[in-house]
Image 1 (cartoon, one colour):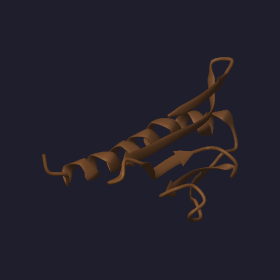
Image 2 (image 1 turned 90 degrees about the horizontal axis):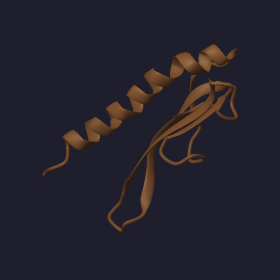
Image 3 (image 1 turned 120 degrees about the vertical axis):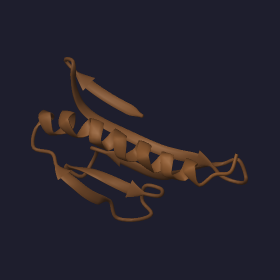
Image 4 (image 1 turned 180 degrees about the vertical axis):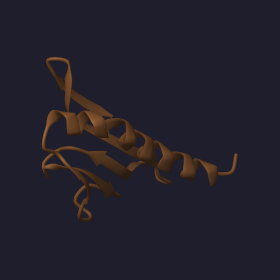
Length: 88
């Protein structure tokens, strides 16, 4: 996770879920971030492999702040779904 704050206010973030694959390399599963598109947006798989899914326009710092927790929860829920399917 990456959080950038300015004067105590969250202004940018990236929440990334990656996992180790069979050959011990890390692969990005999904991420939600606020960089470069003017939107809170989600990438499924590695950045650059597909178009981001635009989730919410960013028109103020408040948009970034209010979207952080739901974005974190969405990425974490994706991890929990994957973990549920794993055998111990």
